[in-house]
Image (tube, rainbow, N blue to C red):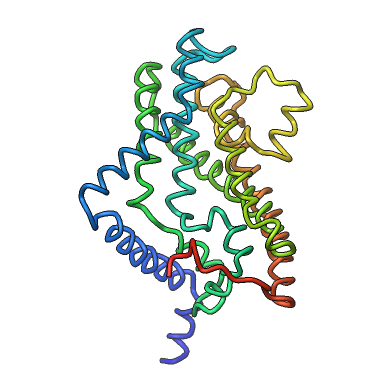
Length: 291
């Protein structure tokens, strides 16, 4: 009997069930926070929609004025903008509360909150930031743009195409999160100096993701697909999804890139975690952490 229980607790099914339970707990807390006051709830959602649409208004106006940007038509640009917002929304929905800004948690000495939890650190990071209600306005805004653009472009919604867009959205989100963790890991070694480095990296991603990169010089474009993988957030996957990239294997590039970035980030983050285990944190700031 004890052997069977032990085998279940070490099985993938046990961990999956545990993740769903933790997501449920955090979703409930998030719902209670959002709905504590109807007036504030409506203002919160409305402001979130306005902020996200305002962030891509510049590109929208350029596309409207010139009937597109480069080889992209106006509604192809709109689709790409919506795709980028949805990818960002996935990150903020599953990794809010300073998980996507991991440098803050590390720089403020708040990783100890995670380490004392009775579960693996990877499970804590995967579930602690789940806030599906307070962040739902972000992916909904992006999805609205994608549906509007898709209708105008008369896209054929086959099961294969829908599966490919879902795969690429997850991959784009994984690349964004990996980029954040990769730079945020510097806070292991420089907690005070690198505490807000993810504010800059996330602004970089949000600021450059709305633009098609077709006309960018080869050297700069290469850097935007490697050192600063902004091209994978929306531009590159949307080229394939909209038929601008005729290669049959074009839809696999972003998922493969995501695997590489996740592996690279895991290596550096584990190195930083090992360093943290030897030195600990010399500072602690309590603000910005959900307790």
